[in-house]
Image 1 (cartoon, helix red, strand yellow):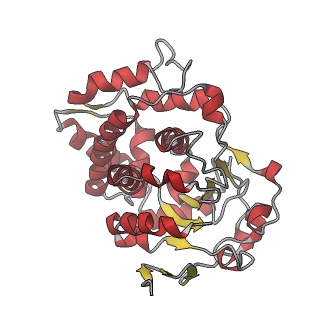
Image 2 (cartoon, rainbow, N blue to C red):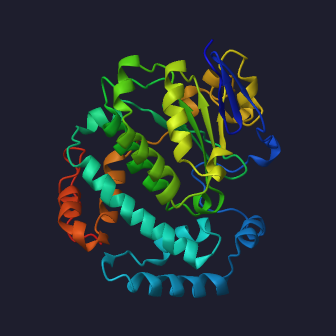
Length: 334
């Protein structure tokens, strides 16, 4: 008899999956919209006090973080306040923690540069998966991302191409102050998964995916909900779990699709979900994050101006010849 697989917060046995410790949220608190960049100051003050942010701590910590980065002679780091503030916020203004996150960010950027050097696709192909959407409303002020959503066909867009698109889009979310403060909740949908795509999930690819999520993203990841998971992929999930910190493991939930989405609704109210997940939102009401994908890629390419000196040539090649054909950095843009 096939043994059950026990994961943190998740129990999987013979295709049956139950979820415990899912967090309930108050629907009445879900008023902010995805595109919002500011809330009432009295609301923002609550989260800022939780993370230790004030005018004084912001100025002092930014200066200290910049000085620490300037001491790393092998690194040409971006020292713009808006960029570094994202790392300080996710680190709750612990400068040492924020500094390590910036180091991890640039270390991972070198790995991404290497991974993406042979990725090339037209703008039409890049937009065709339409596999990264967002709920128009926020959950406790954090953004709800829908990744996959029944479009996981790696014969049309391979895993590296899809991952590049995800990096482009998630990079664009970092600049929103509400995302920096409140973070993101992600739903990963493996519906439509082609079994021949299993070969794409090599150990190297799994490490790349996990390390980008866990070690370099300057955004709080509040929860990851996995739906429509094929039994065959449970082995991939187990490998990924072994690489995750306990904190992240406790925020991952796998939900069955044969319970009328009751398990998912314990964590995410139907008012914030599309009809496909038993929600009330129409497909047309979701936010397509691949809109203006060419502009979003330019934003990412600007980030590749900075990094370790040893990778400058490789980063510049990627920046000047980005994977989405026809997209070039604007001349003279800083």
